[in-house]
Length: 122
Image: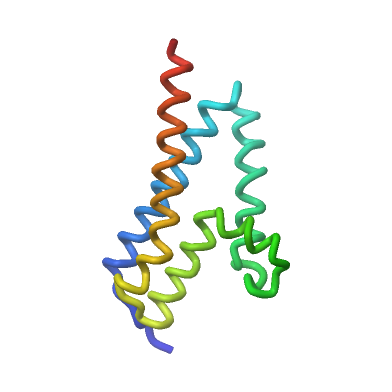
């Protein structure tokens, strides 16, 4: 099956997803007291993110409580977007309903990270 979607749209979506992960990293670095704690936090978040996103197991086959937790992670929405763009040729209008949760996640965690960063400077 040949490639269906728009490369520029995929790159823009990937940029938003990267920003969300960077925001998470900034927030973790302001919470952790040392590098080991920061690494443990990332494992505590990224492993469930991978397992509950639909990357390894079918999302709709998971229990409802696991689906609810999985919806919080940006990876869940990013995978849906990537599959939609690459396999179905989705455009901006189909992508937006999955992109806004990633952007909201990035904005919230950036705000938390900035607020905590200012507190650590004082």
